[in-house]
Length: 324
View 1: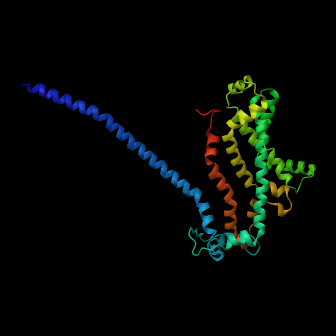
View 2: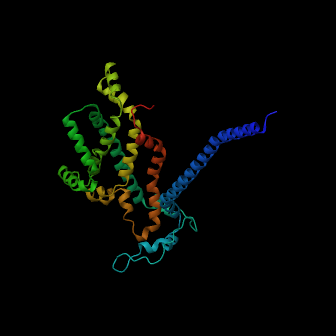
View 3: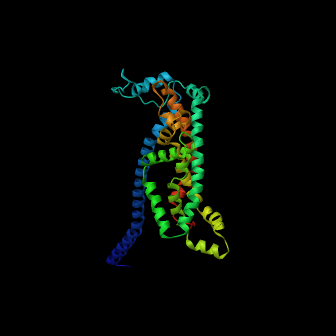
């Protein structure tokens, strides 16, 4: 028979051991609850900001199916003008409607079939943007390979000049571009838009930084195996930079798809203007068409982003020449 003090000591030891065994589990559950609360708050914040960012897009899409009378009733005060042609102070709250009272496709019929001017401007945008993206990537690939592969004072000076030009807003270079285009005799032609875009420094800088992450030992190994410069460039460098090409192509497409200043300054013929310029000139009598044209205008960038989202994220966040 154990004495009462011995029994109490044994029960106390068992209680202590149970407490020790339960403490890690309790701490783990407490940590999991804290992490769950953090994830819930971050998710709520992400949903809130996503709603704010997507609201204009959703409003544009839904309002494009409204009748002209309903659109004028909801937003006509914003575009109203006084007798002198100036804007009228909006004293009433604008009615933002997500669901139209009556769905109609008349705006899309006007944009796609009855008014060919909209489609002409749309294809003008495509004609301007696609060659710029393709040939800028081609020029940038060759220039970036030279900057990343070789070193020297001349190379560093030229690359520094590229950085300075890239940091300048396009509005600063509009006058020089106008003067050069006038000297070359390409004003009021598509070349006035193509040439400055093709030789823009943005893609050169981005691809140079991307190619510089490729380990130099890969170049040395290829040279030892007998590969020439063109083989190293085409069979080693370009495949490793595939993500960078995709991300830069998406950024370039969105940038030039939304260009306004270049066509306004370099093209006096309105028939050659892209849809981005034409959208800014839709007057109060065409408010209903503005939403439909905006939806058509958004289709290509949205499809491109959805298709290349993974490549865009990979190209921006990729930090090495070879995946681990």
